[in-house]
Image (cartoon, rainbow, N blue to C red; front, side, top):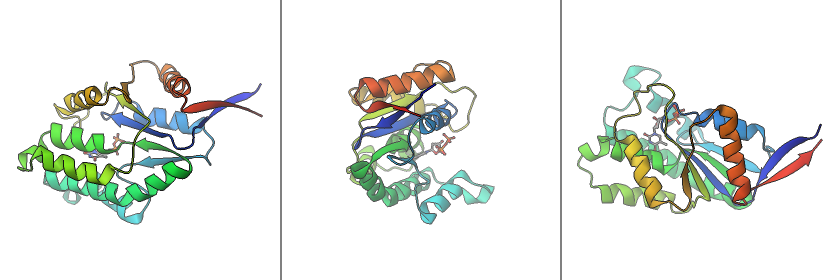
Length: 207
Ligand SMILES: Cc1cn([C@H]2C[C@H](O)[C@@H](COP(=O)(O)OP(=O)(O)O)O2)c(=O)[nH]c1=O
């Protein structure tokens, strides 16, 4: 029987965002498994493509307790340092192929600002947003899939983070949508059908 796969349209930028433990990674893996490896670049923020971004990510995840930053502002600035380092590569990937992003600046705003830690530092929201805008202005997403319902409790999902995602969803209603809660298989179908319907993906009959 023929296996049906997909290609993502060249130039498309697809973002997966949302709370921890919501099935985002599972769905990204499913999508990766049904795409040809050549034409789409997958990137995870903050771990990116370089030793610098990889090592900062490991420090942020805190393999040892003393490795993690104590300051919420330092934490988000470290994330943004990784984003700044990765954006030129992301831009190139989006121009020559297609790009699938596992988190981008919505996480910075949702976890950092709406989670409360950056606000506590005294940095005004406008300054934080301006920094984010400056770093991310080269990248425009074609679609943002937002995962909002955690399967398990996760300490990273501070109160407010979900509200942050909802505010971003309202602001970017044209390109962003909530992924409905469903089985793994149904969610995979939802993602692929949405991409097909919006002309961001095409079916490929092979083998
Ligand atoms: C990209 C990004 C992530 N984060 C947070 C979201 C997650 O709680 C954490 C790690 O992200 P990630 O490794 O994607 O977590 P998971 O695989 O569990 O979904 O970092 C920020 O606080 N700011 C950011 O800019």
